[in-house]
Length: 79
Image 1 (cartoon, rainbow, N blue to C red):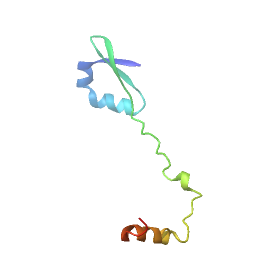
Image 2: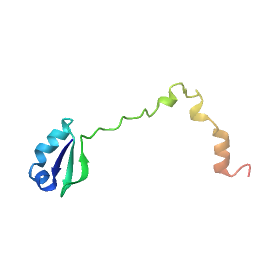
Image 3: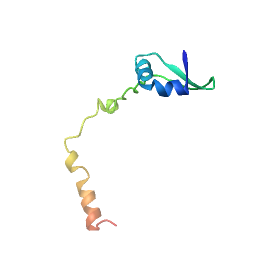
């Protein structure tokens, strides 16, 4: 892997970024000592958000489920 001094990296940053983006990572060094590795960004894979619900079905009475119990709670009945 190519090693580049900080001063040279600042001078040639645009071209170095293009190289890294093309799959050629490099190391930035200070006084010959490696400091950081620069490589292309790889976005994480997007997880499936609803895959676990693939077999889920909504009951036909969903809009009215527990309607009597909820009404009783709001009206203060059954306390």
